[in-house]
Image (cartoon, rainbow, N blue to C red; front, side):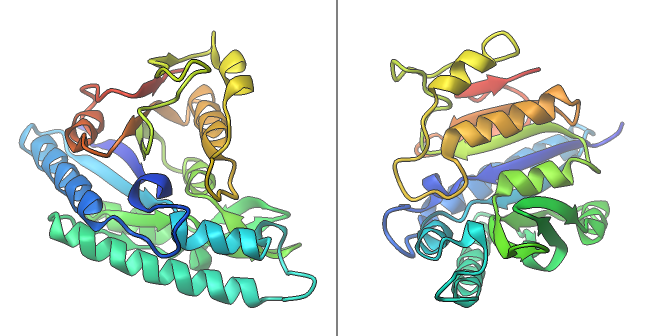
Length: 269
């Protein structure tokens, strides 16, 4: 049987305190890693292996600096390229710590640096070299991407969210499932309750009511995530997506990776 392709993102809001610089919730990352390892092993035993691509958000490491340097717009009129150096250093440090915590949970992802393989044109990711990603997947490994600052042909550099990188990656790899771990129990409606399902019939009304992030976030918050995910689903580049809470509910990540539910919000075309 053909393997199942799954993309998992641990959002910056659930693995850091986005309002506190350099905060990282290591125990939460390790718990998530244990659930990913458990899901991979379960699928292998059932004879339906999973090809897993992992991503993580920038959280308190990237968003605060990106906002300070207005890095989405590129080279700063007064500080020049300083923002690129600061953000690259911060994200490299965060990613190293992230991998170490994954290792504690029995998962050994291999980082493919977005800065080295991606390029934007006026803020949009136009190129993503996936050769190393595909090679790692062929060998049964877990490639790891993360939100990052990347070269931009017009702006000098810009910020690429994990969702933007996923969008570029999905041009070459179709994912059967996408799982996004957040700090909320899925997508919340105007009444604060979780929206159990998003589909073609309710996406427009929900998108208009979704708010951005209350913490520093230069990539659009929940609205941007939902719109990008639904575009992938509608275009046939992914089968389904689920946004769920990770805190205190790590088992839900295991279930979602295997397509067994997992709470939160399910997105279907």
